[in-house]
Image (cartoon, rainbow, N blue to C red; front, side):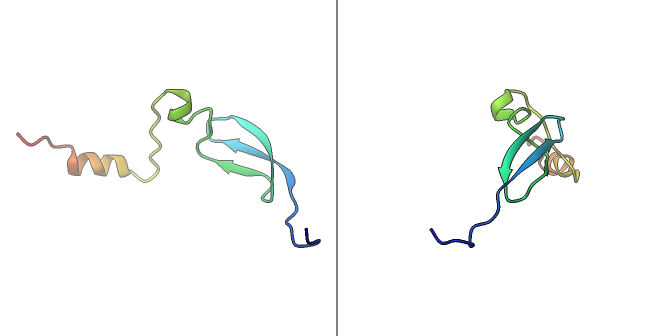
Length: 68
């Protein structure tokens, strides 16, 4: 391996919006994320809607009408 071309990996803490935090080695260091494996619907089995810009309401307004 060539010397001096690889990034430095440092221990960083990852903080999720749900309150869960854990440590990982990364080139970024500390990170803030919105969804982790504790609160993600695939892993937790619970449905959680993350809507920051009102996109769900816009979608329901546009496509929520049932054609009869």
